[in-house]
Length: 277
Image (tube, rainbow, N blue to C red; front, side):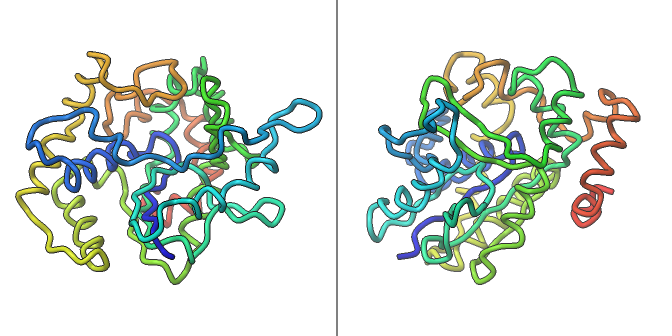
């Protein structure tokens, strides 16, 4: 029954980059740069006729949660699936987002929340870093909602809720935690760690040439250029460039002292655990 390998993260933390790396390694047989290769790794498709609103016409997370497990159970039997995900691993009205029975492994990507704020501002279409800080620190449910596709809904939670929900759950499931900053520092080394992790239960021998090919054809520069040419269609918010700069520690020049302190105080325990403080 186990078939899903989750590629999970809070938004703007390197999920799309990891998907390109994995898609190039496992699915790119052309040996050429292909900006569309990412389509090989999708997110869970909820039913198009899913009632996303309650009787008052408001968006209902309770309604959405009813379809999480059924959508995963409908994946073709026997196939291993890489699935992109920004949902927190929540339980809403006795509905779990996922289960150990459905999950084969977890690739968990995390990024310094101070830089998530910088990278997310245009993505969310907000006007100030203060607004973005409120959004990622909000202990209520943070929701990604695509107006062009009403059933494309992801319940992310805050940065903290999202991180802890995956880090502390599904105890028997193989997991690898990858920091975005490490992936930037040495992409080949840390992607090799992911491939070695996967080889342990997917029954393949890691291929270093394919790793190098994947890293080369998933570079930030190539993906940014592809977006400029209109070859990247996954910016759900459609409110700014998806591939901006991709560099760590941008917050040092863009956030003021009070903004930094608020993020650090809100996520102090988790940031210390991850080595960000």
